[in-house]
Each structure stands twice: as structure tokens, then as C-alpha cells.
Image: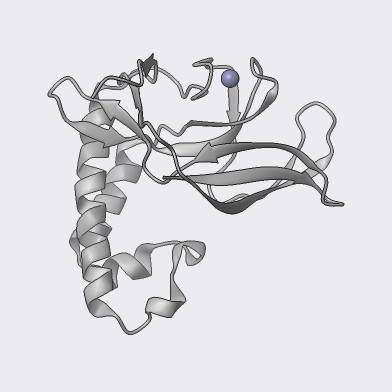
Length: 178
Ligand SMILES: [Zn+2]
């Protein structure tokens, strides 16, 4: 499963789109484990398009999330940015504990990957490092060439038949690799 995003001008015209999130992109770690690719929207100078790119968080950032998630459901929830909150789960302590537990697993894997990673973020389509990654949570951006104001919208889910695998440095591995 993946999330579909579109890039729109202020008057609603679609100028691009990409798939991101939903857990279909994984790193293959040398120890045989997998780790979800942290992703972010980006402008790729090689694709000349908005794409999904890697996000390479710092170790302190990862540790901050790890510590918040280890504190349990309520603690993790209060640490999350406002837009990451799920108000319809207000009273569901069990949901938040489970959510925090999964976040501990994910952040632990991300930490293992980050300790091995050397290079800057890459475009997840063409592997170029000539990318301008959009700041986390930012939906309003200027087109890097035309300067036009744009918005990035989530529009829905898409079924993805094959997961995509990457090396620790973000280079694609054949999609048939388990
Ligand atoms: Zn690219």
C-alpha cells in the first residue's frame, strides 16, 4: 500500500504527483533486517519533477522519537506534532500504547540504518542526490524554477504490487529481491 500525493497550483491545476509512505519502500540492512525508508516530498533536479525522496534524520532526532515512544502511548502522543494527531482516537489508550510500541520498533530500525548511512538523501526514483527535500509538515511550497506557489495534497491510497528495496545508501535493489 502507498499514499498518492498530487502537486497543485493555487487554482487547482495538477502539475505532478508521486507515491509516498504506506511502508512499500524498505532498506535492506546488512544484518538481513528491513527498515522502512523515511520519506519526504522533494524537487529532483534530475527528474525535473516533484518526487518522493529519502529523509535522512539526525541521530538526536531519532533518539528523541525513540525516547518519546518508549514513554508509552500518552507520552508519545503529546510528543507528536499536532498534525500527526488522531483526534478520533481520543479515548483509546490501548490504541495509543500500540501506536507507541510500533514506533519504538520503527525508530530502533531507523537508528540501526542511520548509524550505517553516510551519504545525503537521494531521489527514490532516479537515485540522484540533487534533490531539495521539502521540510517536514510543509504543504505550501514554491516551484523551484517558476516560483509559482504550489500545494502538496494527499489524495488517497494506491495498491502497490511489489515492495521496493534499497541499499543502506538509498540505491534501488531489484524489486524481486525478498
Ligand atoms: Zn530523480
